[in-house]
Image 1: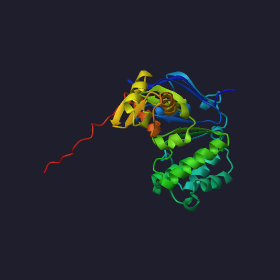
Image 2: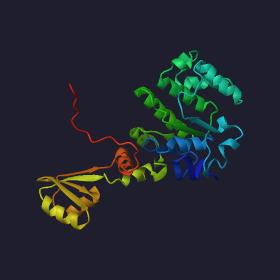
Image 3: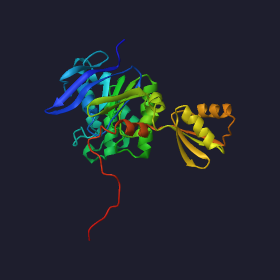
Image 4: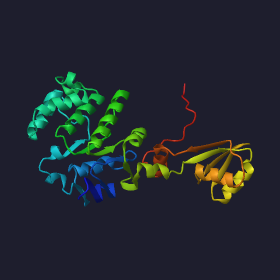
Length: 312
């Protein structure tokens, strides 16, 4: 059985700019998949290639084994949101969706269903040019869901949403994934990605930097550490260093340890007859891992924070 989404050695250039450079990954059916990367990394370009909005210079992108352009009923097979403002501002929310439904052979009743699902029923008759960014995001998600597709691709869907809206989209996407749909999500919000994605890739300067399940990604973090408190820190530090761990003394009875686990430290102390009064593991966050992996991939980096002065 083919993957829900397959990206194979895809390359895309715009003049001298290589936006996507040999990216390869697959998204399984029913998987909640995340794409992370700095601004300009190639995330949106990769999604545009998936949807046939751009064509790769090399490589292939398929959905359930077919190019997007070959799908018989695209909106019934793939729902996408790339730009929350991609709509006719003079049309009402209802008429925008009705136009999409009629041109794609979808029943008009779906318009009311998706408007209700995204919480826009009360403003269905208002022209979309007056919508806030958050309302535009909701309308874009309604359009993506119009054909009740098994595959969803959403680029930064939480942009412009208030806290209630962020919780809403998180719950909605998790519900859709639990129904067996494939969800591909691009987002800069680390906390949201950590709470939703099953697996993810990180892209930087058009290249694939990392690919792993969320659990593997966090477990492999160089920022993971253990804080140890003991009245015998010198002896414990000697044992830990001999085992290859990196030990930093924080105060007379506290050590910060990397390169090993809390369980291993506890066992080592027990075997050595040493007393522990505190043992706390600190796992690297998704943001820690992201910053570590993309350190050399960001195109724009601000100067280190320092005093800000103004001339009078």
